[in-house]
Amino acid sequence: MDEIFHIRQAQVYCAGDFQTWDPMITTPPGLYIISYILYKLTGSCDIDFLRLANVGTICLIAVQVYGMLQNLEGTPEYSNTTTTKIDGRWNWAHTAINVALFPPLFFFSGLYYTDLQSLLIVLSMVHLSMKYGTRHSQQHPVFLLIQIVIGFLALWFRQTNVFWVAIFPAGLTLADFYKTSHTEPTLLEVSVDSGFSIDDYLHVAYMMPWTALTKVGPLILSLIPYGVISSAFGAFILWNGGVVLGDKSNHVATIHSPQMLYLWPFLLFFSFPVAVPSALGMLHRNVGISTITSRLPRLWLLGGFTGLGLLSVHYNTIVHPFTLADNRHYMFYVFRILRMHGLMKYLATPVYVICAWVSLQAMTTTRRPRQVRRTASGRSSHSEKKEVPMDRLNFIEAKGRIGFAIVWLATTALSLITAPLVEPRYFIIPWVFWRLSLPATQQSSRSLWAETVWYVMINGVTGYMFLYRPFEWLQEPGSKQRFIW
Image 1 (cartoon, rainbow, N blue to C red):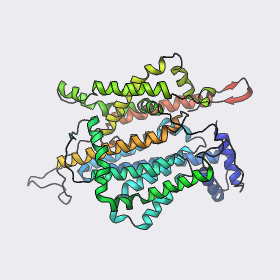
Image 2: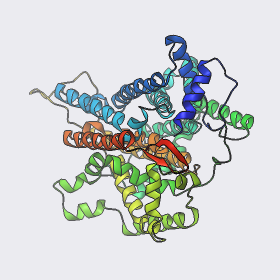
Image 3: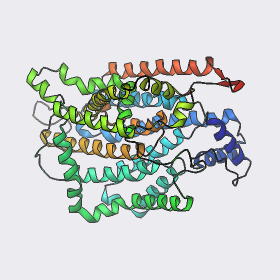
Image 4: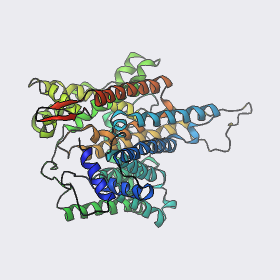
């Protein structure tokens, strides 16, 4: 496991030696700097204490997720009664707990890895940007500086964080400009019960930059922090002679498009209890067969994307030597199945495409706004709040959800297809933002509890395999090897 290298490097830092660097480590020293600060405060830098810091981090991640859900969904239009507010807050809390229980994330919270602290600072940056980033009246120079500092700190934990603290929030800024524009519905058929077609995605992707160009001044001001962060990362690459530190030979950036195919079954394997009901909820509603059929993916579209997937698999499949050489990782066994027969990787492609459709449907299915209660006199029970027309509210949300999905897809592609190695840890940040996009207030208690039970089961099995089923390599007798993600 890589943990041995991280622990050794942290203890070197705790000893005050900032010049010695283990060449096997390819990520920046943010994790070790945090450990050094904690060592100065507590006087502890042993293995147990270093691991304990990640336990605290996963608790902070749950708090951060709750705050982001509150910011995303806690609008007056969706919280018109005390009961609704209580239910919504419980769903936010339950979702935050489930994110903390997400198996790859939960597993590494017990070890000393960079992933948790990296995720926490990325979430902090995106939360800050989503909450204030496009409110032009609040873009004080101090606020812009805070964004730059947090984004810069994120780069000290993992290099690919640049996509999530610069490209992602910049794209969300464009999406927010488009979402709040006064354009009326054209191609978009706003429905609170369904996802959207490829036409809607193409329409929003085309309109987002054009709408933003009508507000060039505020747009440039909003994008300043992300431009500075990107420039700082570019300067690092020039100084370092590449993206990775240490062992550059085994971590060469390349184009690996099948990564975007592996993403979809990963999402659904872990989140099917909430994703499938969200995507296929229309089948449980009182609608006609023709309506259901119209919401299913078009055959030519399925065929087209399956064809593209087959081309990607045939010409661009990369199996990193580490994947085949290390049988401690579960990914070793996944690729062993895919390599059982020459046709296996091609037969898996339609499964990738179907998983992609379900995942995107779950992501872009709009919420059903709750009606505002009215008194006998006809007044709203919340008359002090400005009521938004229901059709207008639906349209605003439709634009926002498609815009978010497009930005998430683009950022995820940039962060994954440049990595030749397939690792579950690389999918953690894309999964978290995808999971946050599923409206928590519209998840049933049954779905959330099913997700919780599923995660507890997976964590129990992987924990048992790690603790009680060690094995030895013939070339390293007496040294215990353990199964990990």
